[in-house]
Image 1 (cartoon, one colour):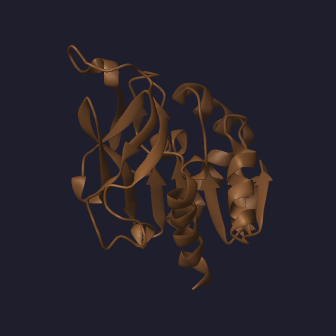
Image 2: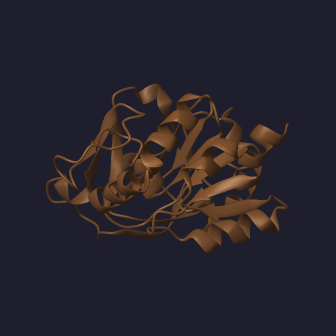
Length: 207
């Protein structure tokens, strides 16, 4: 069973429907105990970094997520679910993130004279930094995926970047190491390419 973390800030049903289409059992839950018993965890999310961390903290999900990921459970973060993995975000100064990855989240508007509309919303090319990365199996370099976001991560260790995107600036749109995977785009909204990425994630713990 895949636990889809419900902290009140995610497009949960769309993720669940995409997984069910692939034949995977998925449960939307806000119970920390479910994260312990699940085969894998998906943390989706839209909205503000600070509000999301407040809800995770209040529900007891923060330590449950940290223990599960550090313990090796397969994990996929989506959109805000990627950003929350980092130490901080300029969107919510002074609010600690999950701090499972070193780095911070910054906004497009922090780039001087940023030339494009914010948020970045629509289809953009996925440029693979690691062509052997398991989530990209069967996904061509340059495939289009769907984004809705105003912030992106700046990593201390760029070797963790698995894909980039170009939108006014070149930014990391996917990161990963061992059991931890995260994408800034929405695979559940990215048609056949997104379904392939979700299928690849499911195969990581059913293989």
